[in-house]
Image (cartoon, rainbow, N blue to C red; front, side):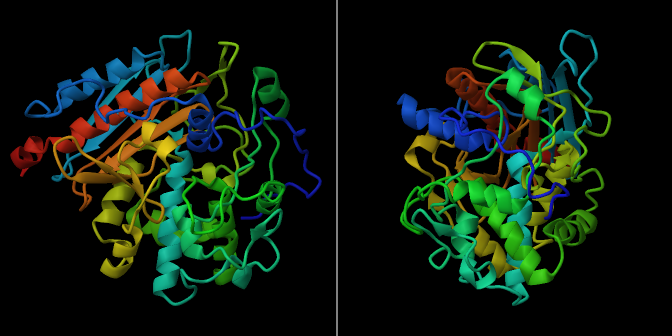
Length: 415
């Protein structure tokens, strides 16, 4: 968990606009913007297509949906649907680098961002199953005095509340509001202690257990607790407990390396000025920094929901959900948050599990059926400052996930 950056690492100046950062905590940023903009929350999970998908969601339909996403102003899109038989449908649209004809790699690397929270939650639940920690443990049990001041109290925040974003911890993550700030600060890095200290400058969003608010800071604290409980960096626990057992050989933490392995499409952000900037190259805080592929993300959800990582009892705890905050309904209509997993309704009935993320110009949506037999991951390489564009992007990508998971006729044909 420890960064190689010394405690004197550069700190951004205080700013009223700092919460409008790119990438880091994209979901929380967008939700905060909704709260101030008064945007209606009646957004459907489909992008306008019929609620009941046409029979046989196959390669042509996936190609249509990725092309529709690219037409919304997204530079590049790649998507993968893994069926119950293990057959993959893969499609890519747009370009890997703006202004060129380079195609988006169909198996390219991207920053998976907050999807990494599901990895962290899985490790914590495994440790709880081994009796090495308890979901009822307080933060102070493991990190005495770390959560303190401005009304924050580590004696009242449990591991479960950290996992479920009901801790009330406020986010104050470093980031960039303009292209100039990006170029000036893209190589800055921070220790977990520095990230938590930033949050301690704010009052909590609510008293622990009395509300729900997406908290990246809470998962930074979880990483620190895992390190205390195991005596090893949390990244090593993720590696040995999840990545290696599932064969996720293309998922890694770049650490202080600011670039991605190849092949990859570049990530872009459209700032308030309207300027589209390549923001691929930067140092990302560890928890949000995992780089992966659509095949590996699908494999993770397949393994998790298929019972390869957690016992039935621990899986039930992970799926014990609470409603998300009202302002978040625009992004997760009908969404409920478990322990590092999001549950969302399907237009065809039932629901699916996921955890999307946004980081450094990469936006990732994913989904899996309740047993993990059918999974889908979508990676897009443009994020927007404009809220309407963000909602339009989110809605269309959610529609792709919905249609891909609703239709299982291809699964039957493959068997």
